[in-house]
Every structure is written in structure tokens, then in C-alpha cells.
Length: 155
Image (tube, rainbow, N blue to C red):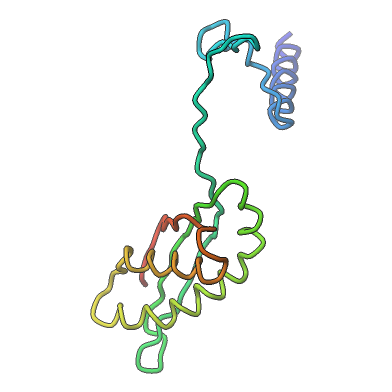
């Protein structure tokens, strides 16, 4: 008896998980009945929902920059970056990530030694401004709206 109950619950979980994987919300009608979700509007109504464009991001990933001081690698700067782009330009930016990686690494290898010579922390505002300017230079102006530095460290 317990085996049948466990098998049934496992089967229901697999079905719900599969439907979510394929983009179908199996609990949508349940949420409407319970009151957790807004009821769908009819096609004939004149009320228009305000469409708010959500920001679209391209994950750049980890940028590791060796900091060369006095002809030696003295420090290493690590940054996790995300690029905010227009949703219709996401593919263009994603296809050009290798070009951006090269430009970011080249520029940061020249910029960070001067910044980290007397300090052990990154000036995130200055780094962010340089990265945005590099995006405009490499991809064209306005393609990347913002560069978000999720985490940074200097070792």
C-alpha cells in the first residue's frame, strides 16, 4: 500500500515537473481558483494592462585579470559581470562575448595596475564606467545599457 502511494506521488511529481520543463503551468487554474494569481481578462474588455519591459541580461561570467606590478604578477582581480541589454539585442551581444572578453581583459590589464598600486580594493564605479565605454566602443553605442559587477575581489 505504501509503495503504491509513493509511486503515485512520484508519478505526479514527474508529470508536473515535465510540464514545467515544457513551459506549461499545470497549476495555473488552481492558482486562479485559490486567488494567488490574477484572473485572466476577457478579449472584449477595454482595460489595458501596463506593459513594463523587464531588463534583459547577458551573463558575462568571471573576468580574471592578472595585475602586473614591477614585471611580476603581484595580484589578481576577479569580477563576475552581467551586461544589461535591450531584449531584442540579447543575441547580438551574446554572439560578441569573445570580442568583449578580449577588450575587457586588455583594458583591465592596463588600467588595474595603476589603480591597485596603492590600494587593495577596486574602484567599482571607475571600473564600471570603463567597461561601459568599452562596450560602446566594441559593439556600438547604446547596445549595452549597463554593466553590473555582481562580485569582485583582489587576491
